[in-house]
Length: 84
Image 1: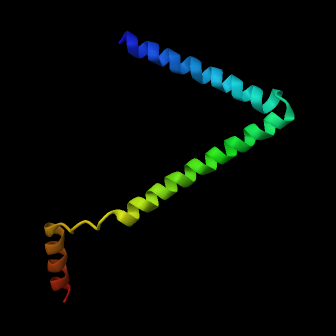
Image 2 (image 1 turned 30 degrees about the vertical axis):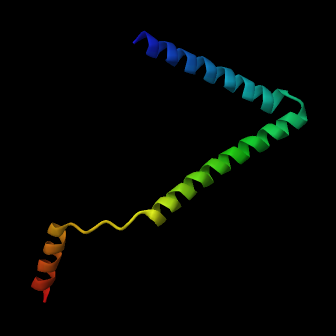
Image 3 (image 1 turned 45 degrees about the vertical axis):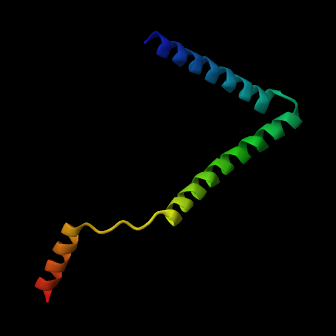
């Protein structure tokens, strides 16, 4: 349990440190660095979303259609026969 807490504290401290660094890069650094930081952030954000969409598309394109369950098929046929 102590190891888990140590890892949690490390993650917390690193997250706060990176947030402070990001704040400095966006608001307090030289203008060229500010622009570059925002460009990299926007590129990574859009890139991650597009990679996720590509993964979803690949999964949809390569996954075979599942076989219908026999119980459902039998019930559907029975219901269709009753309607006629």
